[in-house]
Image (cartoon, rainbow over all chains, first blue to last red):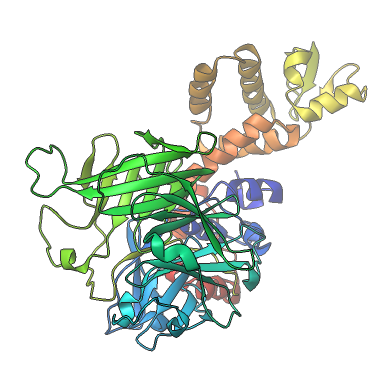
Amino acid sequence: MADWSQLPYDIIQMIAIRLDAVEDFLAFSAVCSSWRSFYMTKKWTPGPQVPWLMLSDNKNSNMRSFFSLYRDKVYELELPEACGRRCWGSSDGWLVTIGSDLEIHLLNAFTRDQIRLPAASTFQFLFNVAVDWYQLIEKAILMRKPSQSTASKEDFLIVAIYGPLRQLAFTKPGYASWITVEESFQYRIMDVACLNDQIFAISATGTLLVVDINSHLPVIEHIAAPPHEWARDQIFLVESFGELLMIYQNVYVGNLNHTGDPVQFDVFKFDFGAREWTQLMDLGDRAIFLGDNISMSVSAANLINIRGNSIYFIGSKVEHWWRYDVHFVDRDSGVYNMASRIVEPFYFGADYPSYYSCPVWLTPTLCYNC
Amino acid sequence: MIVLNSSDGATFEVEESVAVQSQTIKHMIEDNCADTSIPLPNVNGVTLARVLEYIKKHAEAKDDEEGLKSFDAEFVKVDQASLFEIILAANYLDIKGLLDLTCQTVADQIKDLTVEEVRAIFNIMNDFTPEEEAKLRNDHAWAFE
């Protein structure tokens, strides 16, 4: 009679490292004491994971709902620290939050650890702006050096796209203020990505820039022109398995000549040799996640419930949220199929977005009782 | 030709070039322990026959990627008890490809299941003390609701 609990440690480890999703790894580790042995070493380092969707702030509760695409389940986590605050997701379990008090924090959704960052009052604006607290930051991106599982706080780098001119600033835990990238106001930055330890930014016109934060004064440099001059509604920059991708999102509402879905995505890959963009018609087995978070790319090859060659997107345009149209027309969220160029809805349960809160993608992490 | 003896006395003949897919057997041959036959006290006859089927196929159809893929897929369609024996044998005989295949098979069986479902499939008893059980659930409460 096979006694699976008697598997040697080497095999337990070999099975465990083939379980990429946090939910699977935890289920495996909870089966019996021998199957828990690898978990106990704290050496689990999974590949890029399918993110969860942190649903909007429900002010009546200290619990926050998270939708797992992989398990098609909603989890409740206690997270009062995120109440009343606008949040941006990351690929690392941490959120960047801002509140009406203009305080900005890193918040780990799983351990509830908080790291205070310089307040929004340290942002430099070219002229006096009158925007509400939840509009101060357009996008906050947490970048973290891939390192050992017990990374120190020095590895955090937070980049913010802020203000009506979409300027760029960065900071690290312990800094007294946000550091503005002076020339960034010329560009209207739409998104930021990190590849090979370099920080790239994309402007509203599709111009690719590289940002050097290590020199005495941060410098922003033009790298490449956009692939074409057509207008676009939204631009994203994604680091995907060692490649730099740019994604244009366009909404063709009311364009009678345009067949297919009103929402369209065009994906471009950057050729560092030729310094130019080429259009990518097929993502292979990759799934991309776009929203109020660092743009993420995951391989759907070994995953069930996740569609490859697709773009999962959640917009933050609140005015679009109030249209709970059965057919999801014009809704600012869905799964875009690169092959058919059609948007399909994906269901994540009841959600109540507000002027400061909408769903964001956040990758779950395992925190060993940090 | 190499002769292999299983734990229950069965004898198998296999070409040396095929047998060395097992690092364990390879080292035994190199260390000159293979004069007459190689004893494998940790593997029974039925399982050894299956393992030999695997390494023979992988030797003869080495370049046929598609063919090997479908062979592998069919190969692991066995009952849980047999799968268990094959994993242990692959580990003992140190056959990387077979170990990867069987571990991936087990991982695929576990995906998208709850703890209780995994225990049922593998017929494993919960042997945690109440404290140990509570610790994991508290550290990751959301996963066990």
